[in-house]
Image (cartoon, rainbow, N blue to C red):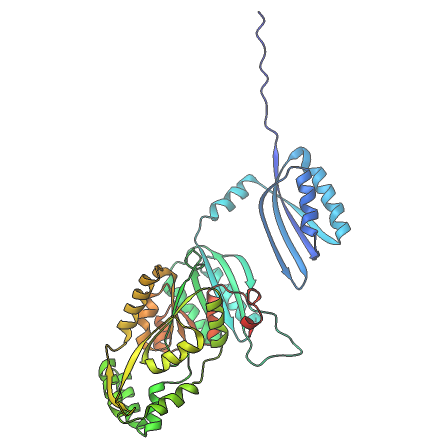
Length: 420
């Protein structure tokens, strides 16, 4: 019996081709391109698109059989001409592709840059630093809304987010450079690891005085009671490190003895809220965040803010009030100092079943540093230099709603009220 000869089947050769399509964007353009690629059984290895002022830049990396590639490119050229866009083809070797794939395993970070406005010189400085650190920019997106030139608003916000790959040689040194750059160029920079926790923050804790409100309430009480100079002297002594927070707080409370509660009520009803608080609270509540006030100030004012914004938790210091409605000069319960703030953040996270990496803390003073360090995202807000230097993130150029950009919110995600 004659032995049957076996035929060896050789797999069809394939090509990797990068398509770059640019021009005026229009509905259905991508669908038209994909219709042709589908006809020739092209595999999509990668795709990305950017649209700036109705100008499209679309990149598609395809894998297609050699027998089909010429026909596909010919049809794509005709379609591009019909659509009024430019299309270019770049062959990619398998070695180049595999090298690109290997780089995808590198750490990814998000560098958020914000300010009242962003100019070329500021973006130049940021991108130079990215390059010096050996990081590669994968994507750039504008987070803030478009600003009118003819009808400018007074308190503008500008924000750009860079998605970068790689690992800085020294994160501490990178933080120092970003801090120095921020000070020199009137911008704020946030450098965060791009992981699941960054996208799933659930609990945010705020300091109150000089954070949610633009005042130190104890100073306002002291002014009304005629003891401001004495209170200020104790505060200054604490700032110099001569006395601790507990002693400072106790001595200042003593000076408020005899103040009528009606004065506190009047101050509460006229609190000067920080720029951006309304917008920030509206968005946080709309998207299901748990919100807490952890303050070295007083519960009387914290509870007023709680009612105004529907805040979930308030922990502050409670002033003792006598039967005549006047302050006794004493306080009730445990003092909320820096250590206690960090403990409360951990406690609330435990109650809400939230991982610490999903928590945010925002404050301005030295007694906020423990909770800023404890939280997954700690933000120093218009803070003292020492606090800024020790915090991982800071905002000094715009209002408190700048926190939303650090959380990844784009203005375009928000409804009309959230854009205020």
